[in-house]
Length: 208
Image (tube, rainbow, N blue to C red; front, side, top):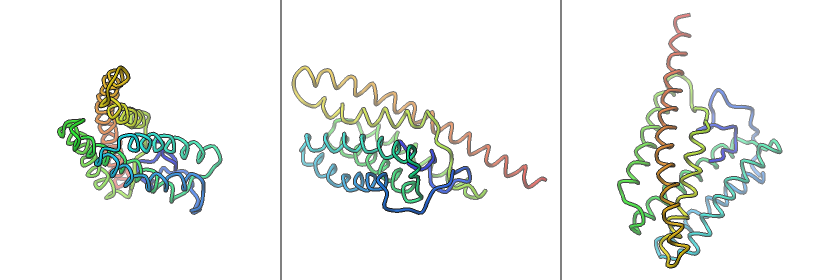
């Protein structure tokens, strides 16, 4: 996801660049609107209003790109944005996974694979908090994984329709999904390596 703040997995990392305390900024408004769209998407996907669900997903992806771009371009990074942006991203991924699995568009084991990575990473983040680190820097692999998943979901939804376009969208959607799953776990392994470096640095500091 395009993190508004400074490429942080969570706000508050010791490696963070300065962020303001401003609340009412355009990137924050975009992130808040994405949060408003979450219940709309859940209602649409569960009640089979696929056009509304698809438009909501597409608008979410567009706003995700724009809020990060605007924040970096105009120096509008904020602590509120660092919280809202990843929260909206995770909510959309979680609700989309559950909604698509509920509709039998994707298998439940795929949901478990992706949620399992999030649970593992939550444990890693809880571990490094013991060393005074509250986040890890986001890297390209993690962003690429999210990019693939956000493209996969609407394509998989489009693939449920009829006609040539649906037959074209479905395999491409699954290609994005599989790349996203692999990169998601590769990113998780990289984050674990970063967490180990945090622990080693802490141990070295105690010895000096």
